Image (cartoon, rainbow, N blue to C red; front, side):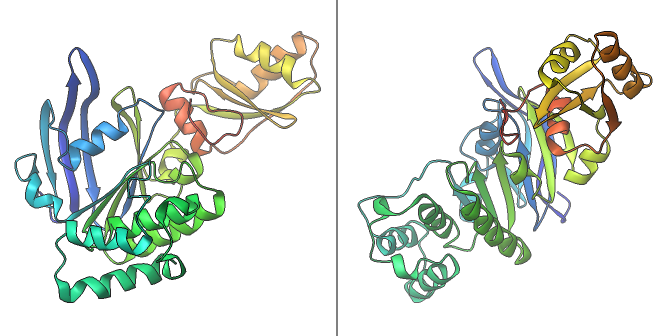
Length: 317
């Protein structure tokens, strides 16, 4: 493996009987970066992460993580990894301190380092005032900080996060990401799976996964610049009527209503897309204004996967 990459995978595949959950995925993930897996539920994100950290054996393909072959050297690799699941996986009946002490035992931290590492984690993740509180009584954001503190207690070189912020408020999510950028700046490579568009935009690099396949990859900016679609904004007096008509056209990939406006994706090779829509709507008695606009990450997601997002524009279907 080249020294600049934390993860390199070729043809990574996982089958469950006749079902292919991950289908020949190739990855090269640089060190000390936050790399995101974006995809709808069931796309294969979690299965891919489990193979990369040695919890699940690939059906086919080759993987190296931090210079170790997986799954052959998974046991050695685990000492260098941190893993945080979507659901809170620590012990609700134990206090914050007791949970961190337990994880120090799991990671076999030397007694000389244990106290200092727990104190450092408590300060970094704002847990100092919560050390005597039972974990089960913490708020969602507090539990999230405790889980991250536990996953990084042994200073892992790589951190896997499986949809870590799906159950917390926006401020807690922002604070959480501030901590992730601190870790990356210190040299930790972070792989995070998500179906939140605003979260995916924070990643240094991004892979969009659909039905087990990697369908797009790059920085968020690169993906938005290279979208395989025309992105148009439509103003019309009756957006619902206009939307219904647009969705019937074979060259229209998707239509989403944003307040009083419509946001539409057209086939990239549709000639004179804006003019075409104006004429179409005018023929149905609908006066409209149509203009080209910049793509957002949700547009890239829809164009790449065919999955529409919900009304909030945040989650994949």
